[in-house]
Image (tube, rainbow, N blue to C red; front, side, top):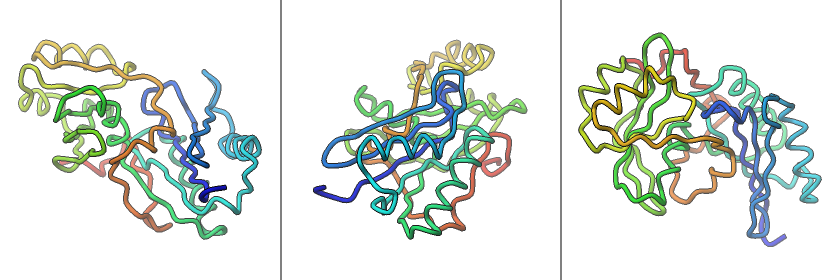
Length: 221
């Protein structure tokens, strides 16, 4: 191997169609695995199979990447508990990532310099955050917030680019269109996208690997 493999894991299921996914960056290539459509699957087995396919021993993985949410309650719990286990017993370095930034990475090659990302937070609220986007550069403009849709619409201007999961309810999509937003609907956001250059990772200790659930109030104002 030219360098130690890097393992990326995701259980946030941002777009509602990939419960678990993982990816290995090894020898200049990225190998991937994901749960079958409609099946949550076993994340540990998914990782084991990927490592076996790539002839990588678990103890060779000294660097991990994981998105911490917001996202699926069950998926985040499973993925982050699994990463904590690997970190505690394998002494791996862990880089955490806000899931909204992972969704924003979809805009890197589409041109706009600023995009807004939006997820359904339930309880008549949405998670939202704006990012400055350029090749090799993905930076949050402000902290993520969970707010009523009316707050988002008040800030929105015609022509603003909004990145959303294709699964976002139509009742939330239509007011954005009416306001003149340019909607970019996304599907199949997976762990391999954590190798997009410029993502704003943070170095995470075991204590810092706390899931940010869609139904929690971590971002509420």
